[in-house]
Image 1 (cartoon, rainbow, N blue to C red):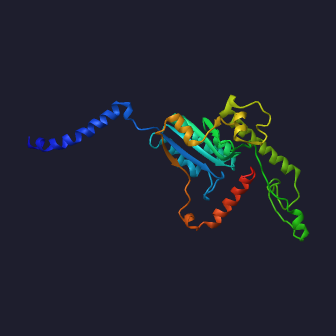
Image 2: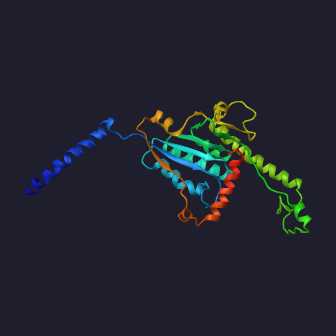
Image 3: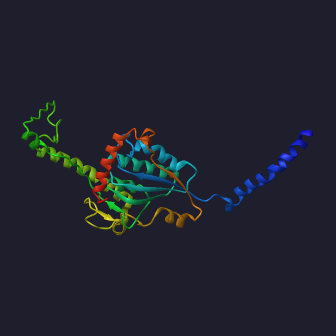
Length: 288
């Protein structure tokens, strides 16, 4: 009896809180504002652990968290990528689609400067794609580049010596004259990857795509033209578009790649320099 008397003040103090919690569960106007997870995909797409690279291994925990942490209403992809590895592009996009189907969450993509080549492959993982009027979009194709240095080394009396145990082991050697058979094999591989890219775009964009012969030639366009071609759904920026859809009290939670601890102090200067040089070369293809 005495214990009950002692506990009574505590229960009275807790009653308002308990009542408030019950009301929140009972009345919908006490519910929290919608949460949208914002996953930033910025940079070159390539395997490896170099800072700034986008790949499936590095992004996997971020993608998982974006879909599952805090019960989000939707997931937004903020894309600024000139492309890179077709394999990593496919792996990242496939992971996003698997989680979207598992969680039944809509995925919206917002393109900043560029979503070209592999960057556009990532955008196709979304249910809807929004672009700025000046965004660069497209480049649905495959490219391989190199140098021919055989005349240069010959000029200096340098002889190239290569020994292999297979007739196709040394292909596209930049220190030897170009071999037509090697070029034909490379083009065959490129065609297969190109067809996979086309299939991804057609599967995800479907009837939204315009009947235009230039769509899959590797050409790229600014945002407004990309909308006309069906490569994007409309012009729109992240915050105003999401607020218009989910309300002004919308909450955003960001996810993005972090630089390694040592890199923040300049201790990975060489790796960072190599990655930045490669990335700048990719962006330069699109005049950026």
